[in-house]
Image 1 (cartoon, one colour):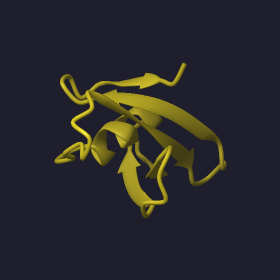
Image 2 (cartoon, one colour; image 1 turned 120 degrees about the vertical axis):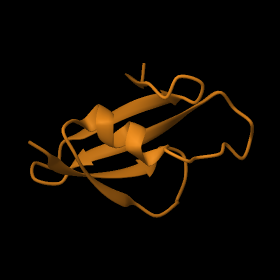
Image 3 (cartoon, helix red, strand yellow; image 1 turned 180 degrees about the vertical axis):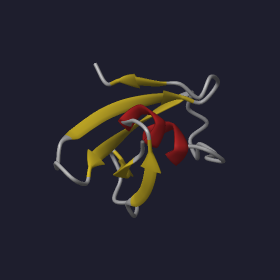
Length: 72
């Protein structure tokens, strides 16, 4: 089962994108498919919001592995 999530970069005013994914982590990873880091960084953080509940999560995406981990 999927759920709608909005995703935006944590430290940017870039537009929000919406994804239907099975989890917040999957939505964060989907945001970075095809992403090229403008600063050649190895990771970036995003805010993922569950559209039904409004609950927000922060994830750091490792560009090398494509894995999402909670911000710490």
